[in-house]
Length: 197
Image 1 (spheres, rainbow, N blue to C red):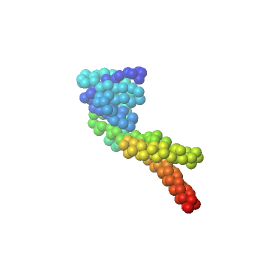
Image 2: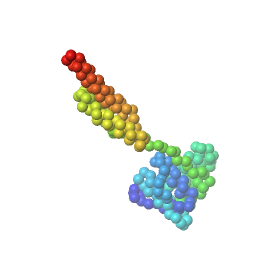
Image 3: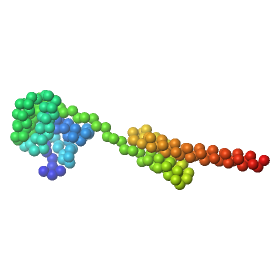
Image 4: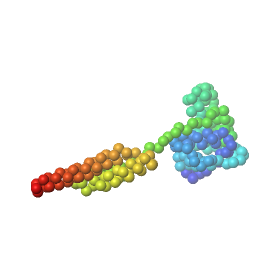
């Protein structure tokens, strides 16, 4: 069986829903296309008519049922004897109908909600980098640090990316440099003005 093989499972069978949720659980996400599971490079398409239950089950299908049974056993839904009996039957099942009989009285596996970790904003990193570089090369990068910082904070608020602290640090360094330049300019101006009189 290669990655492009398609296995048909009756859409109205209890096994179809359970396999769907197991694949979702393994990937840590919800399947968006109804009737399709994509997991570990393989795709299982569910057929609409009930005659598909007579089709032969593959090793991967048996493995998924074993996962459902293991989960049910670990949750206390099956006794040790029941689990052992169903496990033996799952491993020797020949058709989808045989596998369906083993899981029809078990609740559907719950998929855990996994929130993907948002990446760090590149603009926030650029803001901090410009803020730090100005300490070495002078105030030329103060304005880019401020611009990148403001844009990054807006982008972070809109997209939920990480990096607000980096953007804020870049903003602080940029504005601190601008303020120091303005204050230094005023002091020099006042100093020159005072000496001219």
